[in-house]
Image (cartoon, rainbow, N blue to C red; front, top):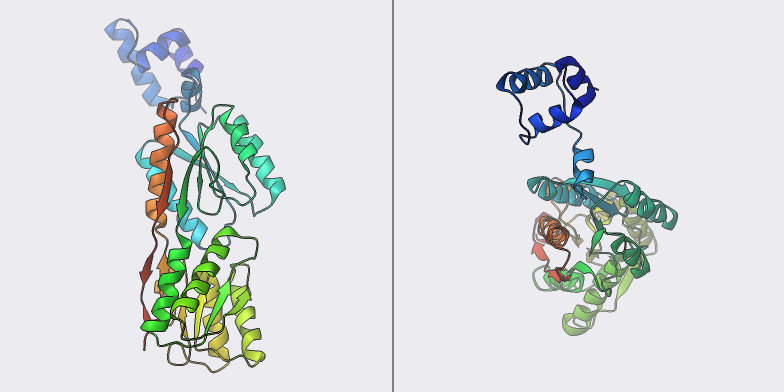
Length: 331
């Protein structure tokens, strides 16, 4: 890799002169300026942007801590955040914790040694004391979705209870379902519990006396497949499934198909997340869109606001999900 010293040596000037010329900040003869620029171009010299940023006391690097890359929702969220960050001239340092506290701790330490200027946190295992740790060292933070939001820093939450209510009410009113199963995420996961609460509320309000039926998965396609396969094997009677995410819903469709149940004529299914693949499944999956692009843009805009003015106060945001009706929930 060509360094500024290499350019200076080839041009017969000091590194300080090269730096001033390339940054349009110094005096030199027109001949020297032309020679230095020509040599830098011929040698394909690229300035060290990190070093330049550090000399100014800041960088354009933002850390993004996510819980998993296996759940299709999170790679799509990463892309949305990265696109928003790039539009503002920032880059993303991706940290995949696999929902393990040991990895979360590693990345929290790594954020500091990587000269990160801000951090977007999406993890069950990041607590207020962790945010205190980052903020006290000059790293501005914002939590998003799964993380707790009852802290003094900026946060973006999604109204998952409302999303669940939209899905379940659709199954009852438009789908005519009278025995709806909820395929829930893990019992210790906040967003899963919010969706469960929405499901239970609608059954109580508009369920025509339905008895709640809840089975659990871990947000993977396999767990959705196994949970619904077990439900069918047990002889349970149901005509609708509200899944806590799209991946499990796709697994549920597979389990129903293998058992000879047709979706949507026998079983109507609504997922949650509106991942890209939901438009290409057979049948196309009805789902709840939790507005990942809006959340990603909000996270970047809020973080940049905090980074550029240290006196700015944190803000709290809530994103409202929307129902997307496709083939899996309507005849």
